[in-house]
Amino acid sequence: MSKCVFVMGANSAIAQELVQLCVSAGQEVIAAGRDTAVLEALYGHIAGVNIVEVQACESESVNAAFDELAAQGKQIDGYAHCVGSILVAPLTKTSDAQIDSVLQVNLISAMYGLRAFLKQAKTNAQGGSAVLVSTCATGIGVPNHEAIAAAKGGIEGLAKSAAATHASDNIRINVVAPGLTDSPIASAFLKSDVMRAASAKQYPLHGVNTPLEVAQSMHWLLSESSNRMTGAVLNIDGGFRNIRPLVK
Image (cartoon, rainbow, N blue to C red):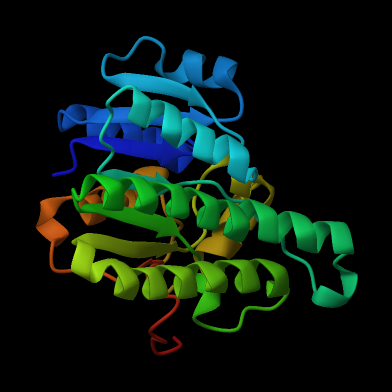
């Protein structure tokens, strides 16, 4: 079991559940995000959670956070990247600014965070485990998901290549690929009972994910219980990516 887990984007709904799981398991948590006031409100009262201000899309900020923790003697052996956004639009109606934002928030931030974690883990020769977040829309073509599918597909490629590079360092890198999750980031798709029902029907196992369901999978991938898994993409999507049941 990872002893100290760095959670990037700790204000997200999935991250909040993951932090609670880590704390319940007796793990120390570094809760990182761009708004310390929000993080203080979420975690300021919880023992074992250290709050760090980080701009996930700025490499200097990410590197500085890891350097400061190293100077404090913190040995981070778990990394969870929970930074992300959703954009549903055809590519022909996606602006340059939107493309840049989707890539920065989803892919580039993941590269910066994972790189900083890997450098520290290799320096300390401690091994470790990292988990990134993709989407079920990378494994099958979904209309109007071009930008987000490209960014998240990059995350899967990043994780697999990095897992191969660092297997000899005893560092595992895996991905969870959720379907639609009941969280503020997806509220536009779940704001009415009709929309929620329509979304639920898109999945072979009807319904949408809860943040806890995704967080539990991430926590497992960070734990010794998954110590034979690396370079894997774990689909938490009610069968969306892999199966097509009979139509009734």
